[in-house]
Image (cartoon, rainbow, N blue to C red; front, side, top):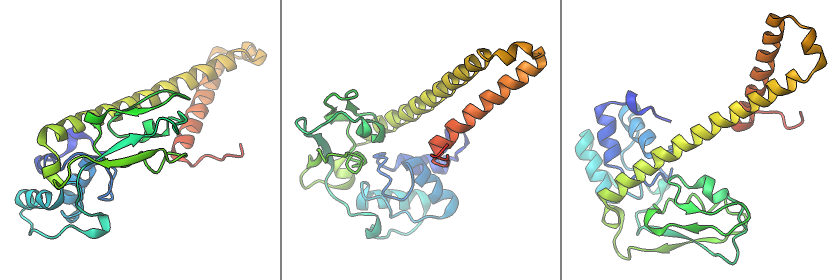
Length: 229
């Protein structure tokens, strides 16, 4: 992810011209990352289907690059969609909650989920993660496509909600690491051999256990851990 305090004015301007659906269709994890790639890596400005033709015109004006047709390998311009969950089929697995970049889906484990219509960006990221295919998309803007199907206010709100989504995930990860470290310390203190160690030795042992627990947590999150251990 991109650190907002380290980006240039041009990146901020490019980011402001993107619709903030955070759909990843451009090939980057979020709109800010795409904006930075345009500025720093020279990536094409025609990879954002939600922004459509008008979005390319906006980016061309900001970057000074020529206007080009939307790259079809990243999708086509179309109306804005809204995700709808079939309540009869939803099993409450919570996978869609984790996938939504703006936290517009509400529900709990093994309970029915629902989408807050006014907050949905139509990113479609919840569709592939649903194990029972109970999420569908409905057209909510008819013939209006690209920026005509969106608004500056909606983009600003989506950007803020995505920033909070990232903050929430980072906070939860930090709290999980702290819980694992606390459990490791408690388990170590229960070992009879610990009482026989000198204070420096005991501290070193605790640090080793904590570091090992944190390393295992990071491996699980990155997917590099050995599932057989």
